[in-house]
Length: 162
Image (cartoon, rainbow, N blue to C red):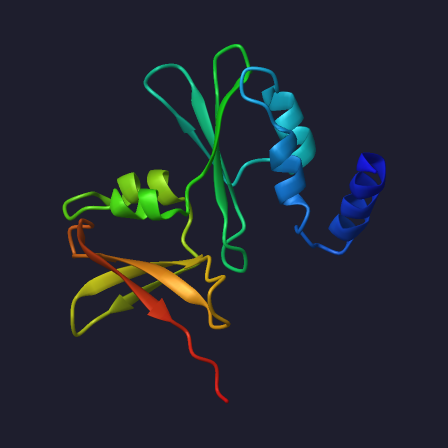
């Protein structure tokens, strides 16, 4: 069954569909899987951060269309230490006024979209998030002042015309 699923995922990837990322992510085991396996299964990361403790964190996001962003931390021996889906309520609660754009990016990954609102003099980053309770897309928003610091967060529902 697993071989059939892998074959199906490989076939879908030929068409640019990443629906199988969830199955690949579940195969990654902290303390066991290696950075080589991560790159082999998911490709190169969208961004790579070097951490003070010698580890590296790789970002794999499905934004702007998907609702997940995985941050995978790998140690100096090339062993996966942590696999974390960061677009969660707990992570959103950590976004507080005063944080910088770099800090937010490292916490939530690349946003689905960014906009600058001239009248309010604010930049807004949006992430598409899980809305399994409704049909309309929901976005988590982070608002930044001109100094690039968080001033507030919010949510928007993108209503489709009926």
